[in-house]
Amino acid sequence: MATRRYATRNTGDVRRTSPKPPLPDPPKTQDMQQYNHYHRAAIGNTVYRHFASQPDVLVSGEGYLCFDRSQPQSEWRYPDLVIAHGVDPDAISANNGYEIRDVGKPPDFVLEVASPSTGRADYTVKRVDYAAFGAGEYWRFDYSGGQYHDSPLAGDLLVDGRYEPIELIDDRPGKMFGMLSGYSPVLDLYLCWDSGNLRFYDPKPEEFLMDPTEMEAALNEARERIRQLEAELKR
Image (cartoon, rainbow, N blue to C red; front, side):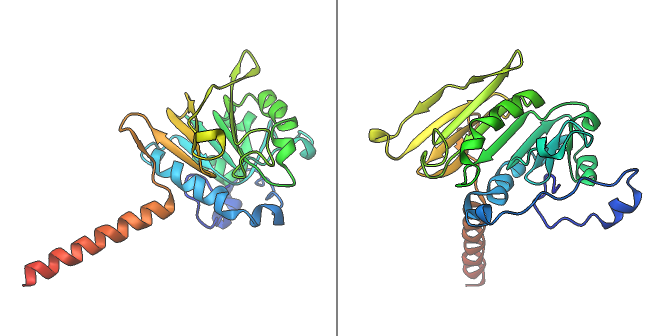
């Protein structure tokens, strides 16, 4: 499980020192490869940077989620994003997955991104499964606007062992495009369906978290400004 880094995983040393073998890698489906722009890396990197200063926060887009490895593997799940506070991300990375019994608590936040093959399961059986796992919040994002999920964006909060829908604010003109958002108490962020993109809004500085493309553009702009200042100094 690539935890909080979203880089190529190298667990060679970990595998030799771990007291038990890590969990197997989940299968890679062509379905998800086709929608990589909306998938784990871009979303995960955006949230990872927000929590990067907190070493006990796991932000992961890889690996299975299960009670423990004795549970039938058919009952394991493979979320697109898992976030947990107050855990050891390195230990979870070494295990290549999130075993609730080993970690000592369920994840606080789970996200599934829609795809043609798994979309219906995301808002039906997986909703039941993640509630049973005890995940504090469960969110679904459908970049198509509801073609694969029952809604472009949906979130649930676990209350007494059952999920209660999180209220969404719909600012889309004619409900065809624009912004659909809901507040995540776990993250203290708003999740926003913005014209087919998933964005995260921080209410404290009142600004969106930069996604990788926006971050690269900002860095390029800063480099260009430095180049211009250096040229002025030389003149």
